[in-house]
Length: 597
Ligand code: BLA
Image (cartoon, rainbow, N blue to C red; front, top):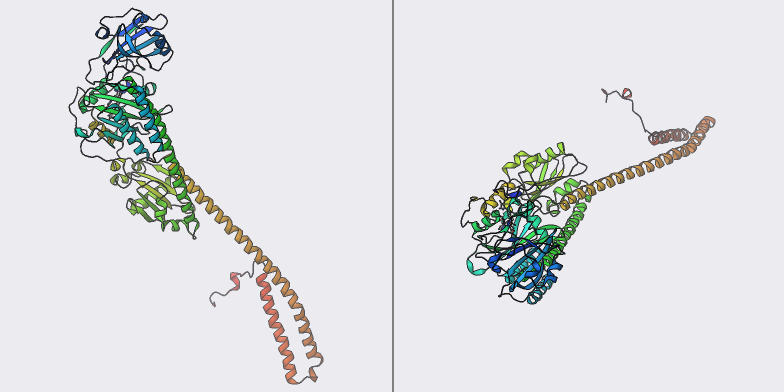
């Protein structure tokens, strides 16, 4: 995080991401605050509204002179997290909800008049535990789960609107679930997106320290901490419930017409993943007990939701694995994998979430779903095979790689491209459109009620516009699982190709071996055959020579016939022998009269 603007310096839209909100120098006035030396219990700082509650100033007094139940305060002083010490009297007045925590050498005590309207905490606990078990049992989607949480929190707290706000990787966020009071004509914020700057890093960090945050009245008059500084330092209120709010936030709320808010952290161990944001259109305060129950509920629900998200991710991975097998089968069938896939783009499309898919094979494009024109797809493939050969390429900003993509953001701003092994320039491509095309923008629920001194920036409308700017030309990014899916598909396909090449080599070798065997056989056979032929020739020749004059002309002819046939047979065997000798008949070009041929 960047360094804080020094305490007391003015904050505006240019430096609000560095506002030191943990040292606001003031608290909300629905309670009062005492800071004491833990060692001596001397009250060294107070909020300047103490007299309003206690009828007098108490600075310099001892805390144990005001409070009867010091034991529970001392116990709370052992902890950094603000802990409910007791509900009871202070200085003979009461009852107050007293909350205390330690901050270095100081102990901080916060007191809020107890709310008479409160339902007993044990009732809330049983309500909460019922809700938790019904959430656990429900076979719902993650979003439905969030919806249940929003409805439960609204029922529990009575706020007009309860939203589940979910952070993205870049800390922008969107309203994921919403429950509204039905009879106030409120319009929905569901699915609206906001930039990271609306809840800056230091505000998010404080939610990990204190996961419940109530602002009773955005138009409050602050109660100042006096004395303002001790040893030159302002009082650190990171863990204090009464901590005064940033004007950036109060003005934001007032511009929306919202006065009271309650915000609860949704985290996964030490990572904030969302908020429960409650709005009320008039000032609203709920007791510490109700806040505790909400906190408990949010913590448990957060774990359940994270669990469900992990399960969703696992089932997406299983879906990817199934598609992977189907694709590999398509690769394996037939002779030409690219061709096989170009005949089955529908199978390709099932691998990852996308709007469309294209198979590029020998410069030709087969597609399914929404994709850019074939000529663009072919050019993207050619460009990638030139610059990123053999690489899986994933981008949520296609224009960066292929500037012409600027003209079709609704078709493709993101591409996941996988070179098909074996044929240079053949590709599988999955496409996603610009994020804003997939975002719902229903009516104008963000119409501001008023503008404060910072103008129209602190309005959801302006925020949404700014968020839209940050994602212009970008698609939903490809997750690691999705990129890995393409990598794995490529390596499986490569493996398949290698295996197939090896198989071919093996077949070749086998063929060569049987050829050699055949050669040997032919060689031996021809020799063996020539032997009796030679004998036949000799016998016939001797017969003609020795008994020539005793033979009839027919018998002489027959004898000559035998000799001719033997010669002919020998020629045939020689031809076979020539063929069977390695290299076969080698033809010298000089042997052939090409003209005559
Ligand atoms: C705080 N801003 C917040 C919080 C929310 C929002 C939920 C936490 C609330 C809390 O502390 O109780 C934003 N609230 C929203 C949004 C919606 C909503 C987006 O209901 C949409 C429906 N805020 C700005 C800008 C700045 C800024 C431009 O919009 C300056 C960088 C600052 N927001 C800001 C600060 C806080 C805050 C400093 C912390 C307030 C505090 O704890 O004092």
